[in-house]
Amino acid sequence: VDEAFRAVFLAELDAAPATGLTAALLEFFGQPSVAELNHWLTRREGGATSRDRTSAARAVTSLAAEGDAVAVAIVREQGRRLALYAGIAARKVGLIDEGGPVSVVLSGSVLTAPGSPVRAALLDQLDGQLPGAVPHPATLPPVVGAALDALGEAGIDVTSEIVDRIAETAPGSDFLKT
Image (cartoon, rainbow, N blue to C red; front, side, top):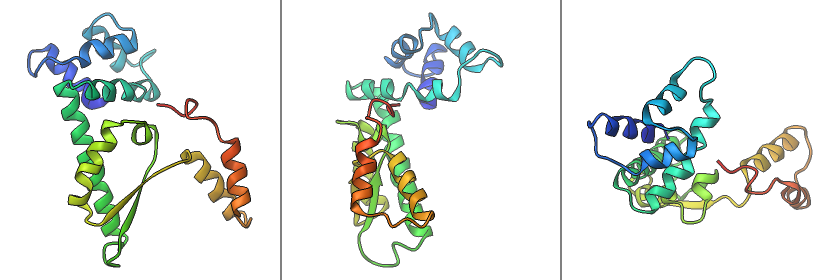
């Protein structure tokens, strides 16, 4: 989203290509102009929170899915970076030295959303950064993993029944949607 803000501000200054992100972000945040959006994002008091800023991720990915060239470039770069980070992480912990396939869990609403262009961009770049990577889309929200880790650290044997019980009580995808 920060890259989208940058693209909008530069387009407003005629320093970058025009983009549909301008109208999309103004509408999403209910701001009348790019100047007002910038003021809301940067003022010290009463401005945008971190949550406000990141909440527009779906607006950016939606516009990328529609083919806006600037949004597509942002999404592709995000996918490239995520693939790069996966490769770095695997090397740092020695997973590549083991020689077998490396599992990469795709979690979070942006990577698990149906038709996610960020996921597509990541998968397009993943083999180049981490040959033999095996992507695994998460089927449960990350909060379930945190709950299971807490139970395990408390000495509780995490059985399939416990996993099923927690999965049944996990909040729906709309609750955790960014």
